[in-house]
Length: 175
Image 1 (tube, rainbow, N blue to C red):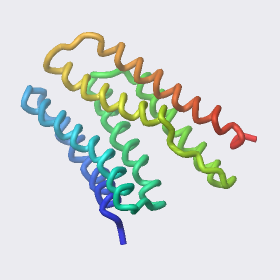
Image 2 (cartoon, rainbow, N blue to C red; image 1 turned 45 degrees about the vertical axis):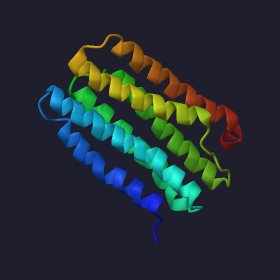
Image 3 (cartoon, rainbow, N blue to C red; image 1 turned 90 degrees about the vertical axis):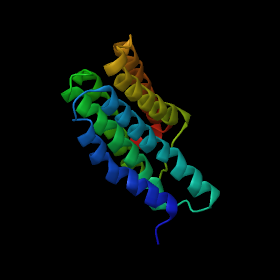
Image 4 (tube, one colour; image 1 turned 180 degrees about the vertical axis):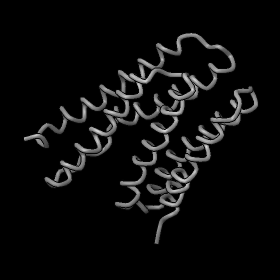
């Protein structure tokens, strides 16, 4: 039977298309705030499902697989919509997607070799900073905040650094 944490993770995945549809609504402060609250709600389920799984001692292989996948689906989907809406440059998003796909492949290769590549603090910082950057970009649509490009490129650098860190810490996977 699926745990409550896994059900929350699945709900996050299922609600991503709804968020993407609401992001297509006309840009008004009301819709922007709705999307910000919706996105933050989905982002917070990432912390909630992990906390529940640990607190209830219900950590599962399914949850360990689905949770990072749900994060990637949420972040990458929103960033791609932001490219379409011309709120963020495509090169930055391509670099983020490249890192995410490369690390998924890297972890798969590690798994085939019996090596577990667990999440580390840099991966967690990367995810949190990606979420903060997305909210900042959404707020900038209404409040014309400065330094959106700076935030985006800091996000890209943190994202790439965390990927490089995974590879360096687990270089035996590549041998």
